[in-house]
Image 1 (tube, rainbow, N blue to C red):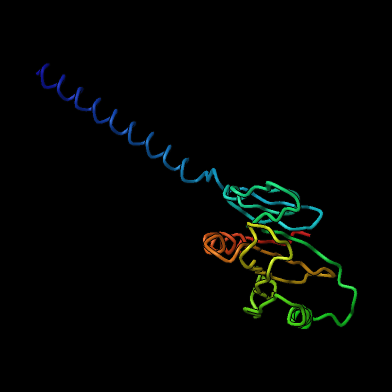
Image 2 (cartoon, one colour):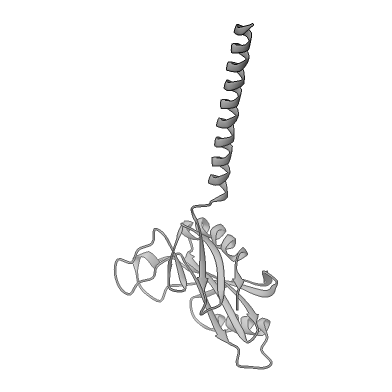
Length: 192
Protein backbone atom coordinates (compact mmCIF):
# COMPACT_ATOMS: atom_id res chain seq x y z
CA UNK A 1 0.00 0.00 0.00
CA UNK A 2 2.84 2.39 0.71
CA UNK A 3 4.27 1.64 -2.75
CA UNK A 4 0.90 2.53 -4.40
CA UNK A 5 0.74 5.77 -2.41
CA UNK A 6 4.31 6.63 -3.47
CA UNK A 7 3.54 5.94 -7.14
CA UNK A 8 0.36 8.02 -6.96
CA UNK A 9 2.20 10.90 -5.28
CA UNK A 10 5.05 10.76 -7.82
CA UNK A 11 2.59 10.64 -10.70
CA UNK A 12 0.65 13.62 -9.29
CA UNK A 13 3.90 15.59 -8.88
CA UNK A 14 4.96 14.86 -12.45
CA UNK A 15 1.58 15.98 -13.80
CA UNK A 16 1.75 19.12 -11.67
CA UNK A 17 5.26 19.92 -12.98
CA UNK A 18 4.09 19.34 -16.56
CA UNK A 19 1.06 21.62 -16.03
CA UNK A 20 3.24 24.36 -14.50
CA UNK A 21 5.70 24.09 -17.41
CA UNK A 22 2.89 24.29 -19.96
CA UNK A 23 1.41 27.30 -18.16
CA UNK A 24 4.76 29.08 -18.10
CA UNK A 25 5.43 28.39 -21.77
CA UNK A 26 1.92 29.51 -22.74
CA UNK A 27 2.11 32.72 -20.71
CA UNK A 28 5.53 33.58 -22.15
CA UNK A 29 4.26 32.87 -25.66
CA UNK A 30 1.32 35.24 -25.12
CA UNK A 31 3.67 37.93 -23.88
CA UNK A 32 5.91 37.47 -26.91
CA UNK A 33 3.00 37.67 -29.38
CA UNK A 34 1.22 40.56 -27.65
CA UNK A 35 4.33 42.73 -27.56
CA UNK A 36 5.29 43.59 -31.10
CA UNK A 37 8.87 44.80 -30.73
CA UNK A 38 9.05 46.27 -34.23
CA UNK A 39 5.81 48.30 -33.95
CA UNK A 40 6.47 51.97 -33.29
CA UNK A 41 4.20 54.99 -33.03
CA UNK A 42 4.67 58.15 -35.07
CA UNK A 43 3.05 60.85 -32.94
CA UNK A 44 3.44 64.48 -33.99
CA UNK A 45 1.38 66.86 -31.83
CA UNK A 46 2.30 69.87 -34.01
CA UNK A 47 0.84 68.22 -37.10
CA UNK A 48 -1.88 66.53 -35.05
CA UNK A 49 -1.33 63.07 -36.52
CA UNK A 50 -0.49 59.63 -35.24
CA UNK A 51 0.10 56.24 -36.90
CA UNK A 52 1.91 52.94 -36.44
CA UNK A 53 5.02 51.93 -38.35
CA UNK A 54 7.61 49.17 -38.19
CA UNK A 55 11.34 49.22 -37.60
CA UNK A 56 11.80 49.03 -41.38
CA UNK A 57 11.52 52.82 -41.12
CA UNK A 58 13.53 55.48 -39.25
CA UNK A 59 11.77 58.63 -38.03
CA UNK A 60 13.44 61.97 -38.68
CA UNK A 61 11.27 65.03 -38.04
CA UNK A 62 7.93 64.59 -39.76
CA UNK A 63 9.29 61.95 -42.15
CA UNK A 64 10.08 58.25 -42.15
CA UNK A 65 12.99 56.95 -44.20
CA UNK A 66 13.68 53.38 -45.18
CA UNK A 67 16.01 52.03 -42.49
CA UNK A 68 18.63 51.12 -45.09
CA UNK A 69 18.72 54.48 -46.89
CA UNK A 70 21.75 56.65 -46.68
CA UNK A 71 22.82 60.01 -47.97
CA UNK A 72 26.41 59.83 -49.21
CA UNK A 73 26.53 63.32 -50.73
CA UNK A 74 24.59 66.54 -51.11
CA UNK A 75 22.15 67.36 -52.56
CA UNK A 76 20.58 64.30 -51.08
CA UNK A 77 17.47 62.44 -52.13
CA UNK A 78 16.80 59.63 -49.68
CA UNK A 79 14.32 57.01 -50.83
CA UNK A 80 12.02 55.51 -49.83
CA UNK A 81 10.45 58.25 -47.71
CA UNK A 82 7.07 58.77 -46.10
CA UNK A 83 6.23 62.31 -45.07
CA UNK A 84 3.27 64.00 -43.46
CA UNK A 85 2.37 67.64 -43.79
CA UNK A 86 -0.56 69.87 -42.98
CA UNK A 87 -1.69 73.15 -44.52
CA UNK A 88 -4.39 75.58 -43.42
CA UNK A 89 -7.26 75.86 -45.85
CA UNK A 90 -7.58 79.53 -46.81
CA UNK A 91 -10.67 79.36 -48.95
CA UNK A 92 -14.29 78.89 -47.90
CA UNK A 93 -15.13 77.03 -51.09
CA UNK A 94 -12.17 74.63 -50.80
CA UNK A 95 -12.79 71.24 -52.39
CA UNK A 96 -10.51 68.24 -51.97
CA UNK A 97 -11.46 66.99 -55.44
CA UNK A 98 -10.68 70.35 -57.04
CA UNK A 99 -7.40 70.65 -55.16
CA UNK A 100 -6.07 67.28 -56.31
CA UNK A 101 -7.32 67.85 -59.86
CA UNK A 102 -5.39 71.15 -59.87
CA UNK A 103 -2.27 69.34 -58.65
CA UNK A 104 -2.66 66.84 -61.47
CA UNK A 105 -3.24 69.65 -64.00
CA UNK A 106 -0.06 71.48 -62.91
CA UNK A 107 1.91 68.25 -63.21
CA UNK A 108 0.52 67.68 -66.70
CA UNK A 109 1.93 71.07 -67.70
CA UNK A 110 5.37 70.36 -66.24
CA UNK A 111 7.95 68.29 -68.02
CA UNK A 112 8.79 64.85 -66.67
CA UNK A 113 5.56 64.14 -64.72
CA UNK A 114 3.41 61.14 -65.60
CA UNK A 115 -0.07 60.75 -64.14
CA UNK A 116 -0.80 57.21 -62.88
CA UNK A 117 -3.99 57.39 -60.77
CA UNK A 118 -6.35 59.88 -59.14
CA UNK A 119 -9.25 58.49 -57.15
CA UNK A 120 -11.25 58.73 -53.93
CA UNK A 121 -10.44 56.72 -50.83
CA UNK A 122 -10.78 56.94 -47.03
CA UNK A 123 -8.39 57.67 -44.19
CA UNK A 124 -10.19 56.37 -41.12
CA UNK A 125 -13.60 58.07 -41.15
CA UNK A 126 -12.41 60.91 -43.42
CA UNK A 127 -12.94 61.08 -47.16
CA UNK A 128 -9.65 61.34 -48.96
CA UNK A 129 -8.16 61.48 -52.42
CA UNK A 130 -5.14 59.52 -53.55
CA UNK A 131 -2.97 60.81 -56.32
CA UNK A 132 -0.18 58.68 -57.78
CA UNK A 133 2.32 59.96 -60.31
CA UNK A 134 5.90 59.47 -61.42
CA UNK A 135 8.48 62.14 -62.07
CA UNK A 136 11.97 62.33 -63.47
CA UNK A 137 14.47 63.45 -60.88
CA UNK A 138 15.47 67.11 -61.13
CA UNK A 139 18.95 66.09 -59.95
CA UNK A 140 21.44 64.17 -62.02
CA UNK A 141 22.30 61.70 -59.32
CA UNK A 142 23.13 58.03 -59.70
CA UNK A 143 20.53 56.85 -57.14
CA UNK A 144 17.80 58.86 -58.86
CA UNK A 145 18.50 57.76 -62.41
CA UNK A 146 15.16 55.98 -62.57
CA UNK A 147 11.76 57.59 -62.16
CA UNK A 148 10.52 58.55 -58.72
CA UNK A 149 6.98 57.48 -57.91
CA UNK A 150 4.88 59.58 -55.55
CA UNK A 151 1.83 58.17 -53.83
CA UNK A 152 0.03 61.05 -52.13
CA UNK A 153 -3.12 60.97 -50.05
CA UNK A 154 -4.99 64.14 -49.16
CA UNK A 155 -7.73 64.57 -46.59
CA UNK A 156 -9.27 67.48 -44.73
CA UNK A 157 -10.46 67.93 -41.20
CA UNK A 158 -11.58 71.22 -39.77
CA UNK A 159 -9.57 73.98 -41.42
CA UNK A 160 -6.58 71.80 -42.32
CA UNK A 161 -5.50 69.86 -45.37
CA UNK A 162 -3.43 66.77 -44.48
CA UNK A 163 -1.05 65.18 -46.96
CA UNK A 164 0.56 61.76 -46.51
CA UNK A 165 3.19 61.12 -49.13
CA UNK A 166 5.18 58.02 -50.04
CA UNK A 167 8.03 58.46 -52.52
CA UNK A 168 10.35 55.76 -53.82
CA UNK A 169 12.39 54.91 -56.85
CA UNK A 170 10.23 53.22 -59.46
CA UNK A 171 11.94 49.85 -59.25
CA UNK A 172 12.06 47.07 -56.69
CA UNK A 173 12.30 49.74 -53.95
CA UNK A 174 8.74 50.90 -54.66
CA UNK A 175 7.40 47.36 -54.90
CA UNK A 176 9.17 46.30 -51.71
CA UNK A 177 7.87 49.23 -49.60
CA UNK A 178 4.37 49.78 -51.00
CA UNK A 179 2.65 47.27 -48.69
CA UNK A 180 4.41 48.75 -45.68
CA UNK A 181 3.15 52.21 -46.66
CA UNK A 182 -0.41 50.90 -47.08
CA UNK A 183 -0.31 49.37 -43.58
CA UNK A 184 0.93 52.68 -42.18
CA UNK A 185 -1.84 54.52 -44.05
CA UNK A 186 -4.44 52.19 -42.50
CA UNK A 187 -3.39 53.25 -38.97
CA UNK A 188 -3.28 57.01 -39.73
CA UNK A 189 -5.27 59.15 -37.29
CA UNK A 190 -5.83 62.87 -37.00
CA UNK A 191 -5.67 63.59 -33.28
CA UNK A 192 -6.38 67.33 -33.09
